[in-house]
Amino acid sequence: MKTRSQKLLIILCGVVVGVVVFAITSIARRRSEQNTPAQKRETVTSVPQIVTCVKRLTIVKAELLQSGTPDAALVVELKNEAEVGITAIVLSTTRDRETYEITRSASFSEDGNPKTVIEPHSSGKMTMALPFPQASIQIGGVLYSDGTEEGCKSSLKTLHGMMKDELKRKQAGQ
Image (cartoon, rainbow, N blue to C red; front, side, top):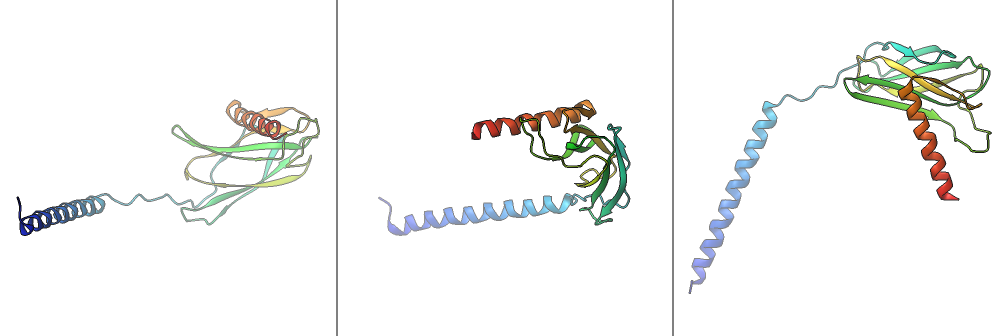
């Protein structure tokens, strides 16, 4: 049978080993963090190129918010040249295989009387973060209030998915 002092010595040895292991791993972690350069986010100092897949939508103005910082954003004012209102619109930017999209949409309705985000011959603004500072911005697609659409295939797919999801949610809520 072990004496009380032997048990205490074993416990003390375990605590010392634990503290030593913790100290060694902490030092190693700090050294690896110091050897790894901090990831720098790119800054944006000019408005990126803007391309469009939508013929009846013109760019009125594009300006940067917080220019020269990693948190820069783009504000784009768009004019609807169509005779019908726009119910949804998508902007996107892509780098390598990664795409960032923003959408602006009104509520989709099944009753044939959708709400619009940009009325005919009127303007509307969209603000977009710039996660890929050197990449161009694409005005990808729009859905019009009369049920027609215009734009690039991938952007229209995004808008169709949004519309389908919203209609499912509305039907599930009834």
